[in-house]
Image (cartoon, rainbow, N blue to C red):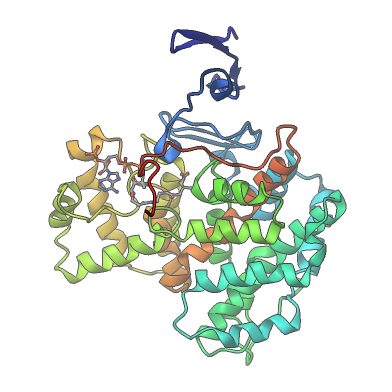
Length: 421
Ligand code: SDX
């Protein structure tokens, strides 16, 4: 591609253009400040690419999402979450041997150090599970001090440790906050079955996860597995760029995901639906609130920085919510209310003109509820799904030929030089 000419202060510079495999174009401005003294300014980074990546492609206008080139519609419900994790981390789907080896490593490393169990006693019973999760993931670095190593084998071992242990930490926090005994991982179970076993097994009787729930959770984890440079993944890349250990980088991603504008939205959607239900199901009133610039109310689970069309994940989750509730013979009025909200919003100019459609968080909570997962654990479930994406981007970043510490610039508008005298 021909370079782009930029004229600043009567000075003309040439900036190379990067062309991606899906016809995206980026202007490489790495020489801009050196040659012109100018920087660019892009609050929220809506127009700024932070890196080159081969992991996930999103076309927000067309509602396209692909992991390593595979459309999400082809992966969801067809392969397992562990195969999806392997694909994101390694770039290809695993052979049968690779799949068996990967799955065996995850099962073997699902336990956490016995001393870590005492940490749960330090949290108040009303602690938010995302607080516990981010703290415990950082704490894992104390039990895996080799996480500073740049040795490929050790890096891959710690990636397995995080994938295997974080679901155990999530289940243990649920058990602790509900006054239930911890249930150890069972090496005979696959990733999803093991998580449900650790969450819901009863010490008195053998627990067999309902295949409907296993399939639904496998689907949800796949749909959440990666989403290119979203807020939490960019946070993992930025934190990891200082060469902080992988546990610390992932913990920073967990904290970024927690926010209600990001992964915390799945909890906020259910809380919003409960509020509307309590208010006589007066959903049209809340649509008006969402449109009112003077109201802080936003339609949670709606809108997206990149998708200005229907989020392809939301389409799949909406269909799955119907199927799961039908199979489990559950009638959840919040699902009907969510559909009514969607119907009104998608026929309202305010939402249509702004390209505001349901996103991944709008219907996911309906399925988590059907599984018996408490609302304050919904974002933990999002984090479990996003782990392979965070880890794949962290690994791509540390192995990048362009690797360097991330350090954005700014435009200073504070007081000019002054003196105490
Ligand atoms: C995720 O990036 C990713 O990929 C994230 C994610 C992933 O997989 O990692 O997809 C997961 O985080 C999904 C998003 C979950 N968040 C929510 O559902 C919270 C509600 N949504 C909004 O807060 C908002 O839509 C964001 C945060 C998602 C996107 O915000 P943007 O891109 O900064 O959009 P904006 O705030 O500039 O909004 C543009 C316009 C504004 O109105 P105008 O100033 O043009 O008049 O749309 C309006 C906004 O007021 N708007 C909404 C709205 N979202 C945007 N109005 C009412 N309700 C909403 N939900």
